[in-house]
Image (cartoon, rainbow, N blue to C red):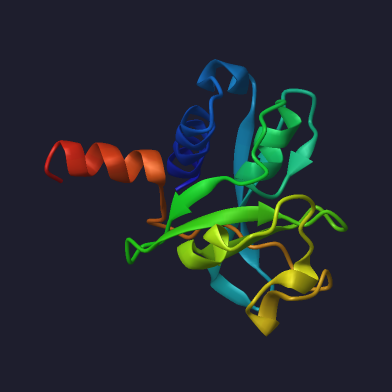
Length: 144
């Protein structure tokens, strides 16, 4: 599973203009979510040992502009990612909500779903099976 999560990180970076070679010396570790031994999340560690909780955090650290990373949910509903100006946490928005985003800074308080409309809520992470818009485009092009 850790190798699969690390490969997803590499694909994420490439989809957002990065290079997987930048991950040389990095590692990934699976961690059980508190109170749920069967649900895992992944932590990524740079070659210097700096810890990251999400792919967008890694991308930002590597200097990529991912303020509005586009991805896709398992259901193939295209959605997007936006980062809060106040807390730097990532939130997933439906495509129609992404289109309605005002220019400039965005904060968690602007999230249309009350469950995520606070900086006190943990950052969202890509789900297993979630794909970036680039991955979906390739699948559709090859008839997948």
